[in-house]
Length: 289
Image (cartoon, rainbow, N blue to C red):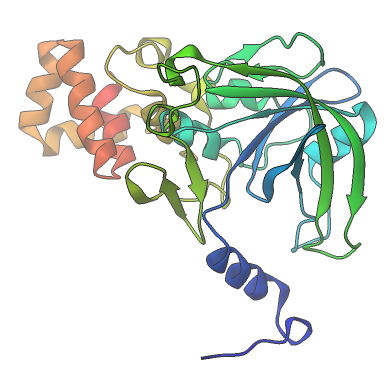
């Protein structure tokens, strides 16, 4: 067994141990708006429910370790005192992950991830239409836990309206854990799917993904590709150019034959096979003309 004194360990290393040990952690997919009403969307795994009466959810955007800066979600909440917390299920996990890319101020992560903005009834931030459960919240308190990199900020969020999709309810009208199909964070790139166990989602942190909004419409509206497939396609730094596509087709005559056939379903299914093998660039080359 190793023993650790937190003050004697590098913050990033300590962060890794803490997140590896405490899990699975539910995900607060937090939607906010800034002072100019520009939407922002970001996930946080320091999150849980702490009271039923009043209904209080708390999540914590930490200060960045590398430069001690704060996140747009925290800045927006301090100004507007409103947030929507959306629950994440497996069908949207890749799109959710894409929103953790650090896009610049004012960039709409709904658009970058391909998720749908749904107007709230009471608060200004939008709900995520794809989310199985959405909580409209008024922020009652923000408690800073420190002023150094890695310090959390507890956002006390009082639920003023809750929205639940009927397809996650059982015959008694309660939420069925198998139907809601939630995911939770573990350490590193690992997630837990409530009804199937561990799976991995590479972090989109080193580069800015092009975003789902940059995917051509005929691909984006595919009847074969899922939201998770689109999220992975959007998490590339650069879309292959015509020369790269031509070289790929020249090297793979069987794949070129599928492409020449013009059968959209076959083309998209083959691209999906590449995605499932974590070969997203080949999927792009399959999809592009």
